[in-house]
Image (cartoon, rainbow, N blue to C red; front, side, top):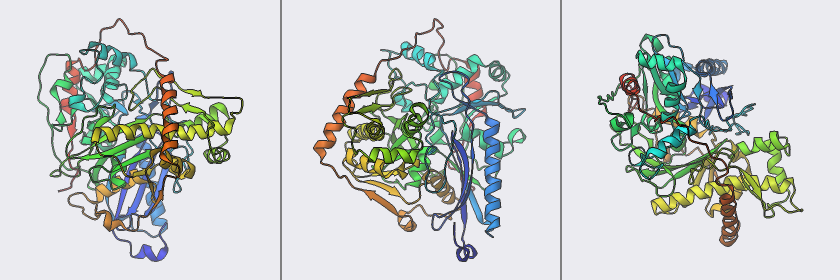
Length: 562
């Protein structure tokens, strides 16, 4: 918190709504120094109606945003900070969480089907302490049979059949298959679609629609970073794709993209959470990369103005587009399903630790896994494997192995999974990464950061400001057209310092441990399969689906106010 002498001379302020699976936060920054002045956080409840299902209440999400904004403003006023100095608000959100609501009543038609949480929800970030009781540990897997049926219909049973347009494999992870499930299994959604009352969106769309008027003229929109995660968006044309929206059907329609300012004057820009973190880490140059360590890990590498299609199991996604007339920048992305979530598993399921801080002490007490390897594939393997049938294993156990070795192996698992993604990125780009920017709650674990540098054989750089996702949304909002109170030039934010972790083991030792990890991964594959249903249904095959997505969904590119 700024000292009282600084409050008198504070310049323009910029805020961010950071809405994730574990919590909602509202944060206010000084646009000149990137200093976090005030914040408030509200935890979000997840429900698990069936095994493999993760849901959240859209109305609770919305109410949490209102509460966070109100409480943060109260804190600012208590410190004599004029809230009228807040010149812009950015929105950052969980990207793949999917919901449908009634545009006439404004009511959600079903719970939001959640994504895996990238939030730093398990450990103290040094600024905000997260105390989530239920974490979104499992990716929602209800659409697995739908995905398998779709893959079986593609030439050669190819999960990458749509990748040339979307940059994505056919997977339970993305919004389109969740939307298909909602239409097929929730009568209220089906009826609303048939009567053209349904609105579909990711969390950003729901929040912006509500904040800009809701059923009384709310703006129904998204940005390109969220749209690129739906499996309905062409990342080359930067538009909804007719072929994707009518996949396996025969009808035509016109897609409409409108560039328009939001009616809520302070709300300037929206970015998916991982894109916001990339901006917050100031990874604006081709080849720069960041990894967010939360419940899962998300590694993004900026590839510049041209999308790079991965041959090694990575996603190609839109990194950001910071204005109407600005070019889109792309990224390669790899996601780790279980990173910080393994801490809660060791605590709640095995009971070998009492807190995340205890994990670091326990692992440091032995300094080695003693040949024990832990593959936490609790809900399958993500990049670069995309193997939903994999399950977790702990192997290499001996009579000497104890809980400290397992704790060390759990931390190493996070680092090995990151190494796998980084190796794939280096192969796809042809240029080795020379350092990795890191953020998220797990980066407070210094042993983990040192292990990461040792396993990658490159420096790991941790910024002094851990809230990079919210910071990135605020930076983009403050730099938006018509606002221009925040410079995106890294040299103008010299007060943001960092700590660098250099490798401390020789490359031969690193390679030996990594090879043993890869052997363990192979043992985890092909444990579970889902029997295909006799129902020949396909995703996207619905005339009303095409009409209601296209008729009601507007793409907002460049949330400028001018």
